[in-house]
Image 1 (tube, rainbow, N blue to C red):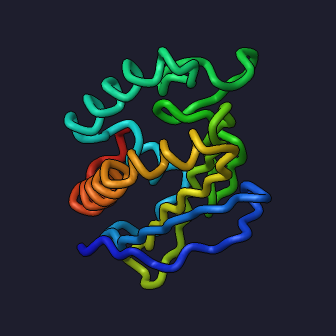
Image 2 (image 1 turned 180 degrees about the vertical axis):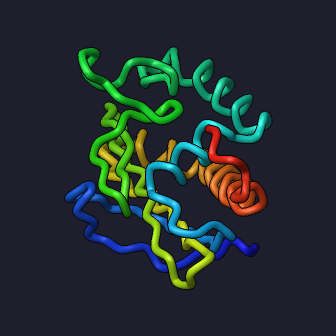
Length: 167
């Protein structure tokens, strides 16, 4: 199952005013997977090297006052998350995750559709609104890691789509 970069949509309703976006898609051999199931599989089964990179990121950005990936970034009462990401909105075919920070706001949009009876197309779009030079510099610095993590996570999802549904 090939992971494909596809044109991202801006403006995007998940983050009005966003100035950067990318999008990747993969077709998985699983009938009618919901967006929430896809997101749970993507973000709770990340490759070990990706989790280690996020831990390193947290150490490096802490002195700058940026939010760490495991910090409480949303309201505590009723706060729902998938992996490290707070849920912003949730529909059967689209779930939006993300939070706002000093340097940039971001949303991860996972959407699903069933182009054929026994498959599901899973799209993962990252939408970002950069606030300042720090946001632009941060995005440029992490871009190679972002692309590698997104591609590896989607590939892993496709390879393991027939799992019994445990997340």
